[in-house]
Image 1 (cartoon, one colour):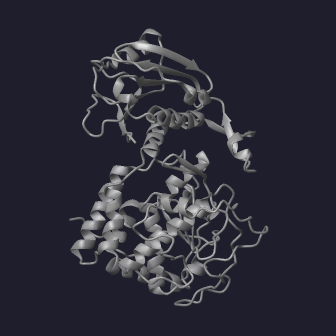
Image 2 (cartoon, rainbow, N blue to C red; image 1 turned 45 degrees about the vertical axis):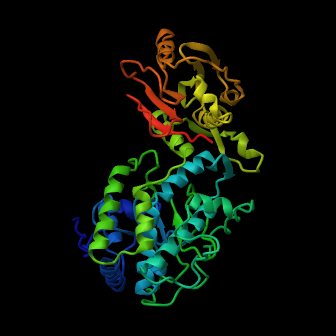
Length: 476
């Protein structure tokens, strides 16, 4: 059984780089140091699973602490999905158990990878679920995520929920998926305008909070807050919010591209350890277990799975404000468009045997999803290869938007995947990725190619693939 890390806070000298960064770190007063030690001790006793996550997955890069304290955030707390950030002048005005609740809340965002998902959705400009799309609004996403996390913590009994924070079970409970709630509560209203220059937006319910610690002179609420630094995905806290979501790596001053990618296997192990520790200490209950176990057995929409796989295998192109994104301009949103090609050649293999045509919407849904992915990648060239026992047609295009206009020929007979790979080799194509929609029943090449292959599998769990990554595409 994994053990809970000690909760002592070592003394430290804050590196100069931390003092001058985007979120310059401040020294805690003796009273605040004592309050932080009390918070960690209470956390260790009340919510040991969260302590396990904090010490195994979220220790600061310089290794001297488990949280950063800075006055340069407009909220009580923030996270970039990897570390915790608190504003001392407000955080230490909360009671002990309110502070415990706030720490568990931020760790929950990290467990759920809300910052990482938010960054990807911000780049894409939209949220997708079951074929439907909405513009991505980081504040709306944060609100619905807060509603779910707060309901879980309340039901689990971890800390004290402060009046005025977000909690409304008519909109969301801990049993909900945040993307579903995002769609359910969407009202098409534009995001709120940014605060006036130099004015810090209000936090929580507009009050400084009751409880331990009145703050030190020169650290009263509101001082030192100059709004969100340029580039963060959220402009200001809404009513009831006490936290802010940052881009991955932001607390250390790194860009998401410079940041080490999240290791899902490590997170799975840490979450499993957190569940084990909490159960062994008798602190577990239904709300806690459902929330944590949901990440041990994630139910990922096939579209999100496909996009994530392609992004890891191929990458993406750069952005350029001189070429605004045409999809967002119609909403009066000026966002940078792609600059140049993010990929070279993409090959799309289509199994045209009879089983593929059992669902008349299947090919259309597959190609429509690929169109969105290809528009993000901006490949130099796309080859669509239709094949049953042999290649029946090849369509080469340079505009990804033409993909979903293809009327796929119905084939017949058996299925062989070899001709598509032979086409690639015979034409001396070196694709960044080959995406193949099939039921998986057919003959495969004897050797795996050197390029990435992603299979869009429509046969459930029955078919096996000798190489490549597999995404299960539901047949509707």
